[in-house]
Structures are given as structure tokens and as C-alpha cells.
Amino acid sequence: FIGDIFPSSAILGMMASFGLMLALKQVYIFLGSNVESKGTLELITNLPKALQSLSLPVTIIGIVSLLTMILCSYLPDSL
Image 1 (cartoon, rainbow, N blue to C red):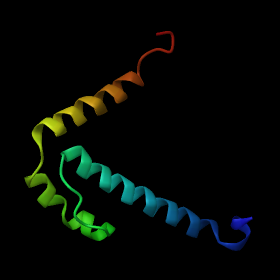
Image 2 (image 1 turned 180 degrees about the vertical axis):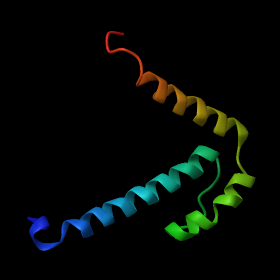
Image 3 (image 1 turned 90 degrees about the vertical axis):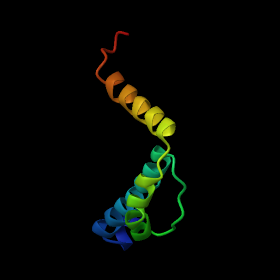
């Protein structure tokens, strides 16, 4: 129904922007930094500041978790 009213490119663009905002907020959590900004452009411009104030233990846990998820996708289904 909604696809009849709005063009699919507008819906895809909106969904892409939601995904970008969620991914940027997750990067701050991955680095162990607080999210101080609300808008997407503020999140992008404050990223260097977040890199300077990263929490090493939180970042290490994030990297290990991410690598575990990536490596588990290569395991055979029989396990």
C-alpha cells in the first residue's frame, strides 16, 4: 500500500539513512565512547574525538566479539 503512494527510491533512501545512523551510533559503543551528538553529521564530525577517548578494554572486547561472529559464519553447519 505505501509503495503505491511513495516511490521506492524514497523508501530505500530513508531506510539507508536509518541504517547509517544506527551503524554510526554502534561505532561509538564499539569504541567505549559516549554519544554526545544527535544528528548524523554531528556523529560523523565527532568521530575523531571519540577515537581519542576510546576505552581500550571495551574496544578489545568489541573486536574479539566481531571476529568471533565473522569466524563462526565460516564454520560448517554440522557443528
